[in-house]
Structures are given as structure tokens and as C-alpha cells.
Length: 72
Image (cartoon, rainbow, N blue to C red; front, top):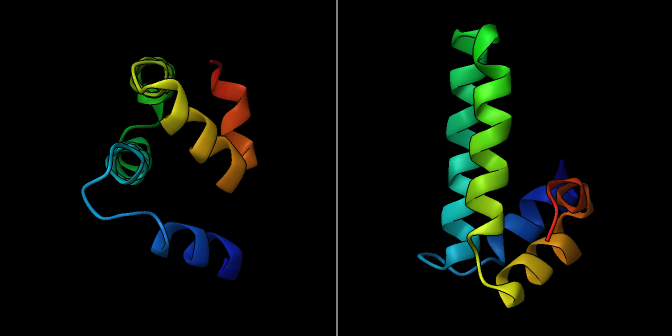
């Protein structure tokens, strides 16, 4: 968790990348409340991720390699 905390902490507040990460946290909480929402949440994450500009996507993928599965 330390690596994640460090990467998240170095992501500029208010940046598109930080806003996306905040949505990931929100979607994670929603999924815990309603496990059936998983498919909808995954679709939303993909849409939100691919709507970012290429620089933001590349920055997120370099800091959080698991996001490479979202495309772009």
C-alpha cells in the first residue's frame, strides 16, 4: 500500500489524473454496497479513463500499471 500511497500523494491535486483516481475510490465504495454494479462500474471506469488525454493516461499507467487494462 505504501507504493500506492506515494504515487497517489505525488499526483497533483485537481489534475485530471487525481480526479480519475478519486473516481476509482468512489466506484470501489459503490461496488462494496452493490456487488451487482461491477459491470456498470467497469464500463464507467473505462469510459472515464479513455476520455482523459493521452498524457494523463500515460502518466496514470506509469504510476499505476494495473490501469493498463483499461485501454488507450
